[in-house]
Image 1: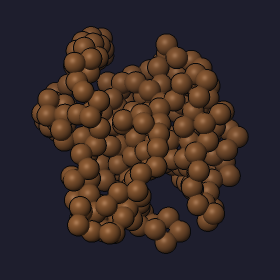
Image 2: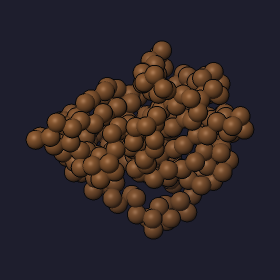
Image 3: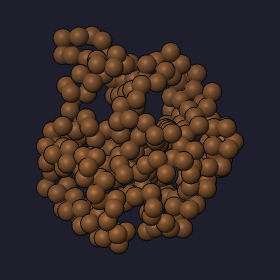
Length: 242
């Protein structure tokens, strides 16, 4: 009865070690799991389910094998791979989830999300997110030639990196008050998310005047020599980083 949660792998051809770490996780740990949840930014960027590469083929095959072994896997899109869609899900057996998804973990109502929707102080990003999540715009983008989509994605990534250099760390983190509101709306006790890359466990108040707390568990990003895997079972939760 073990659940695994991961996010922010940013899989790409330029970081083959991270891909190997993920494949090793799928082959060694995941087959014994109750379920595997991938909470966004699985790929460094995703320009459509018609994209093909050796990396994508390996990942699809490994996820499909996990599905055939009877282990369900779930995916919430991130800010890098929000175009990952139904064709990918059909090929791999993975289940696509909405931006916010509530599950029961051993009696704890747990809210899952990527985390970018909680960073409302990053106003420029939220404006950008609102635009690129318009269904009609996605429909048009996905009908562009693959090479054109790659060029657009590379320009957006470059501009995003430049923008981050001028932003304060606090702006790119979750807004505490808004996060508490979201937790109250879903009546959840635990929150699990990624996006900020700041692996940690926080005990947060629902409001300044309240003694009620909720647990906010932040997943870390992956590197060639370090992973961030949240393991939850009947004994509680822990991070695996080797």
